[in-house]
Image 1 (cartoon, helix red, strand yellow):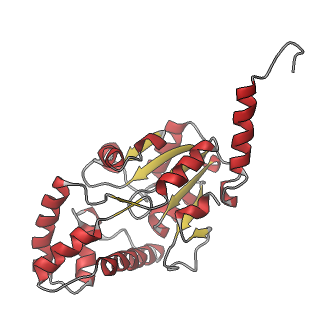
Image 2 (spheres, one colour):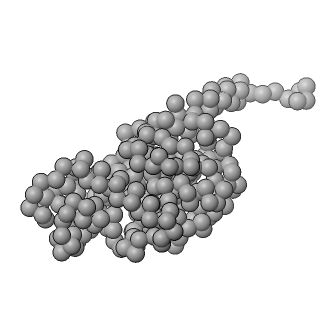
Image 3 (cartoon, helix red, strand yellow):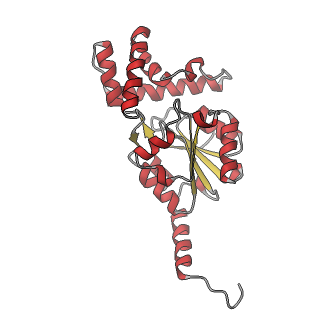
Length: 255
């Protein structure tokens, strides 16, 4: 450093704070420049209470919201398993409300009722976004990652292009440098293109980024395939075969 060059105290303090914050992060975040997140099932969860009420009204019997949440995780695990076997993404995965339809079917609600419930889901979703329940640790974790100097981005498969609106609704939008909405960009996970587009817009190489998501096939394996690191959020321990690190809660990302 030239003798007349000075480092401002604030700059030194900020750098020291970031180094201290980095030391507490999950080992898989060492040396990266950015953390990319899935949204549904990772940062945000469905409003299972509203969805359980709809199911109860349609099927004429009571459903526990936690029961719907477990069926959702188990259903996604089954989808991941089929994709690992080389089967294509489910044919119905491009239909509106396919996730909720499958959850209802797993609860032994007949197809005709599911069709009717899908229309009610649309109306309920129009009133207030159904994926509106933030993970209890999301804000703290995102804030800590940002404080450590990492860039943050989202890649989300949506059916209606409302990602920006949703993250603003749940007060998480300001944490992110970039939001990639599949409906807007015309590409979906697990296709490599949507990951490559995000990396290009961030201006970083694949090995400089980690993807955090709850789907083994759509998130973890897809990220690994383009050269990124991956961390799988697996709260129910459904993926013991995972080739990437697993966490049970988002809080494990920041110690």
